Image (cartoon, rainbow, N blue to C red; front, side, top):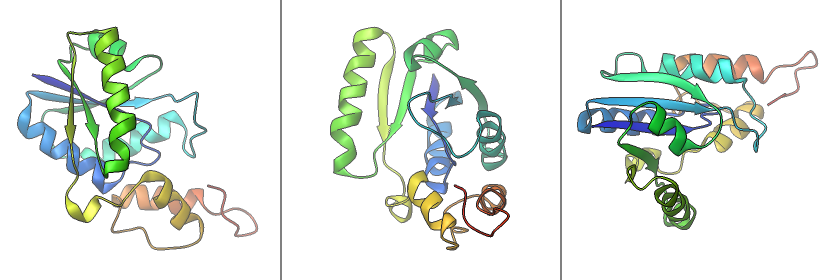
Length: 165
């Protein structure tokens, strides 16, 4: 089985990599699909997000990183994925994720959606919270890979020392 794990990963967190590790134990391969994301305005460019994901998953077997634009189910079909992985941090995520899974099944009934929950110590971690804390000078080193931490520090500094992310 091949699993597609899509997201904007702006930036990838230890919660994301926890799900990648666990999915890699369940499947023959995991594709971490970094979305271009026209709907959101990412802090990091697509190329930066791909590079940060590659750094964060280094050493996890059977994983690859690709970028995509468009429908997730189309990327899954094109890359031969059998399932789409989605993370559920809290009950509040469920309604939106259920709606996405139902729509994806309608668009392509051959591709399943599977849900995993992160380890409890990552259940409250989100990319947006990490960006917000980093932008205010807070320590997010225990939420992200060191390469991501370095990129956040660089991103959040401007000429006047004010956060930019």
